Length: 118
Image (cartoon, rainbow, N blue to C red; front, side):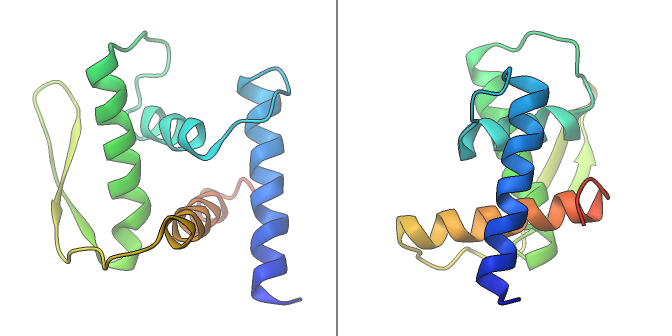
């Protein structure tokens, strides 16, 4: 199976899994999935977040997702338990479509690592 087809199939598995679990089957978009990963990484599941915290959660998720690619490195947890990352290498300039593919690939790898999908 080609890499693109495998990525597409795995991505669809993730969208279905998360949409069924968190959105009553309504298809979640990339941003919503990144947000969910941020909440997971923070580990404070049953909590309501303010708008600025939601942005921070997405930032946490992006850093965590791109860490295996060498762009970020975990640095420390602050006193409130929020993870902080440092930039190891700047992301190259990417077109919107390329960004989307990179994030989907990183999300698929995250869910494979967590053994939620194969």
